[in-house]
Image (cartoon, rainbow, N blue to C red):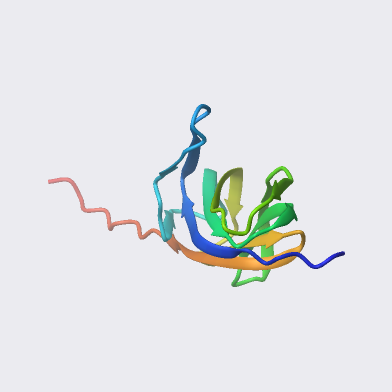
Amino acid sequence: MTDIVKPSVQAFLVCDTIIIDSLTGKKSIIGAFTHLWAKTFPCQHPQMGVYFCLNDAEGEYQFEIALIYLDKNQTVGKGALSPITIQNRLETHDFGLNISALVFPGPGRYEFQLHANGQFITKKDFFVIQQETPPQTPAP
C-alpha cells in the first residue's frame, strides 16, 4: 500500500442523521449528541450519522467508519463511503455517512473511528447510559 497524505480533520460529529441536499451538496446535521440513553440492553438505535470535514488531503481515498464498544474492545458497526479523489490539499471537503440498525450490547463508552485507506485518521467517543426507571408510586 502506498502512503497517503493524512488529512487534517476540522470537524468530526456524531448525530441522529445526516441529510445531504441533492442540489447543493450541503449537509444538515440533525440531533448532534454526546450521550445516548437506553432502558435495556442490548438496545438498537435505528440510525446514527457521522459528519466529518477535512483539508490537507490529496490523492485517492476510501473512507471507512468503525463503531467500537471500548469497554469490550468490540466492533459493533461499520460504514464506508464511495472512493473519492481529492486534487488539491488547500480545498476543504466535508462528508456525511448514515449507519443503520446499530446494536449497543451494553452501557459504556463507544467510539467512532475514521480510517482512510486503512490508516487511522481520528476518533470521536460518546457514552451509552443505562436509563434509570423512576420508582413506581402507588396511585392515591
